[in-house]
Image (cartoon, rainbow, N blue to C red; front, side, top):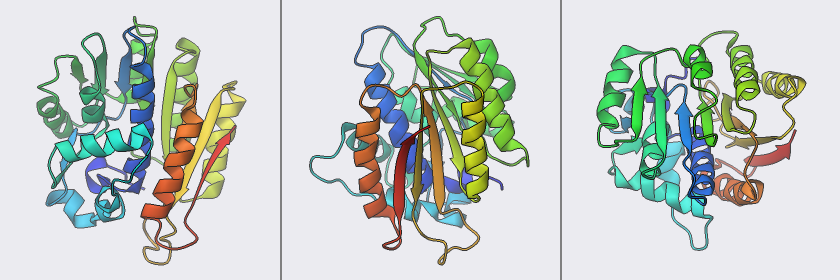
Length: 273
């Protein structure tokens, strides 16, 4: 499949991964010590939902455009909505822009993007953030050169486009190598679910590589009948999840299944590997 960010900006998969990222960043901000954020497949940073690729697919209609604020929601959910709305009603912030908005003076972001046009747009989107650095390179190749970060605290987001037939294996391999260099880091690995077997194999490979503290999070909006050729289920592997992250995300998942589900068979699950 081709999962270039621009075509899917603000969809239900973005909603899940970005709320999880916000939850982790809010946790890291609880201590004064600096942290680093490394985004291996950063995209362009800011997306126009009203024109271009995102308008062609209209997937934000099953994602951010469907969400609404509710009382007593988890902090990650409400913070994410605030960040998404700050950029304007026709725009959506990608993961590097979301991360940049949550950096403090002592923190930093390294956003990696290999496509030149996307990299140029990303540089412009992150220009206001003095603590963000854009690297135009292959995220898989560059990641290990950045680990461990000098701060010894941080989160790595691995969010590839799954264009190559062996992308699941490449992603699992990259995660395992990174974890060996920076075992205490927090990792977010996103994956699309078009085949339950592929998702199970990815999780099995991660576990076989000796990564013990891992949380599997999946959301299915049950849109298979309405969009038989489209993506309707998404997953995240979270390595070294922060304290109470599972509790917070469990509450988030219930909200997302209720708000984004196309029918009563929409489901979500959170499971320790």
